[in-house]
Image (cartoon, rainbow, N blue to C red; front, side, top):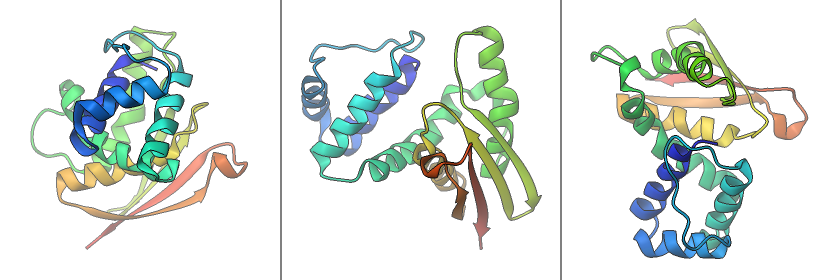
Length: 182
């Protein structure tokens, strides 16, 4: 996983959960008290798993709740990070999700074939219904749900997310029916 995600996690912990002291405590609890993450360097996925589990334990919250909250924090930041794809003001949550897999992940992989972005696709079934398909060896579907919610907050939209199948329950991929609420 690229360091930018670790950097987003550091920002999330410091902004929402107690500042730099909490981040340092989390690093120490996972055995890396002096770890610095560089945005374009790759780090083992297991480090993110350790940090996420450590954060859930420190916050006394279920891991999936922490991952989804992290996703909601990260969603709007990804728009800023990948701003080259999002010029102008015409965007909404469905638009962003639809191009994430087709343009952003494809571009990332093209420029670095060893990078392993998730397989993400979305089909708009109506103005208010988007079906999202997600597959990744990382199985971070709670983060995807959070990203959808975070994008909704950014664009002033609310959603009902019905995960009709999930890799954590034996499915080959996660499928989420995202309904825009009025």
